[in-house]
Length: 256
Image 1 (tube, rainbow, N blue to C red):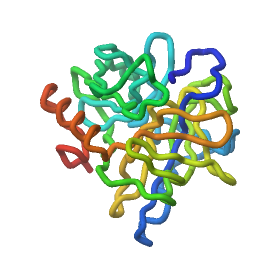
Image 2: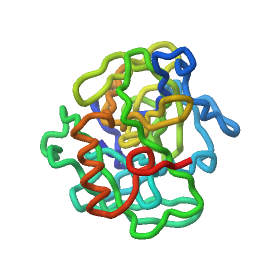
Image 3: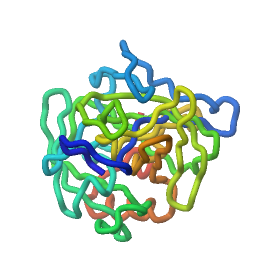
């Protein structure tokens, strides 16, 4: 769920993850450590958003979510943050942008939990300037994959989203048909209101790629991300790029 400026209850949003794969060289979290960071609650770190301009604070209908720039004119977020045909705004380096959203045909707004086709793509009418988009991956997440989570949510369970970008590590504990579960253990991070729609990053063949979208979390120890590798989501990406005549990094174009 998006976070309005109220306290939300049990099931909500998600933090950040880096993902490592079965190969030894990939069993590490992505190196996304740039600039000074500060320890905070729920075992995440406050980071400077200027170091991560492609992870943006999305505002829709008075609520806040997180989104990732994944193409010259495209952002990726959670389905429950967006209405079909609805719009949201975000800022990058002082410029404001407006995105019109599409969600998968199977997504049911009235039954958002459980509903694992929980993704949305937002189209921006002009190029998003001075930012390098992240690339998505069609790679299947594996159990024990290390991930890095990002989100603009809160720092305490069921707390207020304060609009500050946070980053933290986690690990894939279980994989289902449409989603994967990140189980909090030790110093790993967990989702919190405002983090919905944020990315979970993994190292894939030596490159940082977005593997999932934060969909929901409980108040205790579990975060659930929507997988991006499923045929359902890949078909959604395909239909979107054809309709909008645009590109998604890692899907139909190569981005550095």
